[in-house]
Image (cartoon, rainbow, N blue to C red; front, side, top):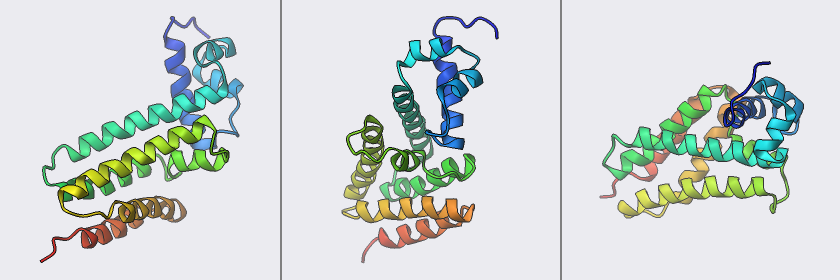
Amino acid sequence: MGRTRPGDAGAKVLKAASTLFYRDGIHAVGVDTVAAEAGVTKAALYGNFGSKSRLVVAYLRERDRRWQEQIDTITAGHDDPRERVLAVFDAYEVWLSRDGYRGCAFLNATSEFPDPADPVREVVRHHKTALHGYLRTQLERLGSDQADELMLLLEGAAVSSVVSQDAQPFHVAKRLAETLIAPRG
């Protein structure tokens, strides 16, 4: 193992943890495995994150940051709030199918950390609340208050796509969303 420059170890650990935690599950992956995959020592891992729990929180925060970038990229080309909302369904499909249909990393983490007071659950709440807020803001521009319904469609499609190992649930959910937010008149 070569020497790691200061600052590099944290990025390497986070990248390795992201791959391993998503692919294998958080509790199934130990810090020894993360450090080995990252090519750093356990001391470097702990020096950057302090604990596995803090590493998990950092992993989810980084995933949330990347998700926000994806949403911004996919919705940027749409001025119409209806199109922006529907683009979120496309973003979900791209995001989850790219990762091999292991499902939503945030929902997966919730199942592994059942204590509502756990810091991991706070990151998950933040992520889901931010998405709900985005949908609500766009729908308010349309005079609609159906953000709860669209969240259920998105989350249901995410779960169904894992079971079926297919993107079809997102197509169905998007069609339902189109119907739900169709202009009235």
